[in-house]
Amino acid sequence: MEKAFEKNIEEILEALWTDEEQQRETDMGSLRSPHQTLPLLDAGEMKEALKMARERGLVEVAGRVLSLTGTGRERALDLVRRHRLAERLFYDVLDVGHDESESSACQLEHLLSPEAANSVCILLGHPTTCPHGNPIPRGSCCQQHLSDARPLVIPASELRPGETATVAYIGGRSKERIDRISSLGITPGIAVRLLQRHPSFVLRLGETQLALDKEIMQDIYVRRSSAGPEKPKKWRWGGTV
Image 1 (cartoon, rainbow, N blue to C red):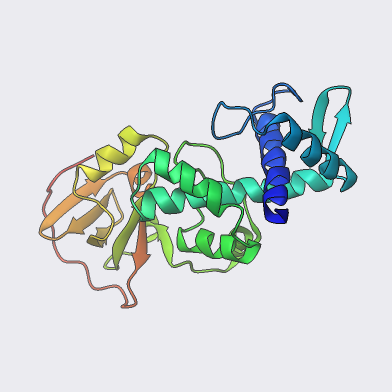
Image 2: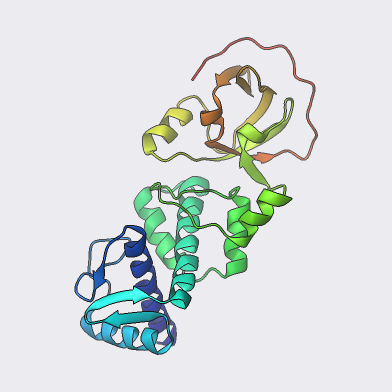
C-alpha cells in the first residue's frame, strides 16, 4: 500500500514536470499522465497524494493551479530521466515496440535507483533523447563522460580507423530515420569496422563497405571491441547515404 502511495506522488511530480517542459499551466482538472491522455488518478487518490506532496514540500497549490517546488522539480527531473532511459533500453536494446517500451518504462522508472539509472545511461552511451525525441535530462555520469570517461557504448562517429565494434542500437529522432539506417544492414548485434574518417566515414559490414556522413554515424551506437584498431585495408564503394 505504501509503495502504491509513493508511486501516486511520483506520477504527479512527473506529470507536473512534463507540463512545465511543454509550457502548460496545470490545475487539478487538467492533470494527466505524461504517457497517456487518461486522468492521472481518481479523485480520492489525487486528493491524498497531493496532500502528502504538499506536506513534503514537493508541490505548491495556488487556487487550483499546481506547480513544483525546487525540491519537487529535482525529484521529478530524476523520474523523467529514469523513464526516458528505460524507454531507450526497451526500444533500442531489447527491441520491443513503442507501446511496450512505454508501458515497461512506466513500471521500471519507479524501481531504478539513481545508481542503476546511471549504469543504464553509461551502457547506452549517454543518449540525449528518448524514442519519441524528447530530451533525456543529463545525469552526473554524463558530466563525467564529457570530462574523462570512456563508455562502453559510443556513437560510431567516435571510432578510430581500423577499430572494430558491435552495433548496440540505432538512435535517431524518428522511426523513419531508424528504418533507413536499418535498411542498410546496420542492425543491433552486427560487427562493424571503421575503415576511414575522411573525406567521409567508411564503415565495413562483412563484405560490404558503406560511405556514411557524420550525422548518420552519430545515430549508430556501438560497443567497442577490446582489441585495438587494425590497420585499415583498401576499400571500394559499396553504397552511400
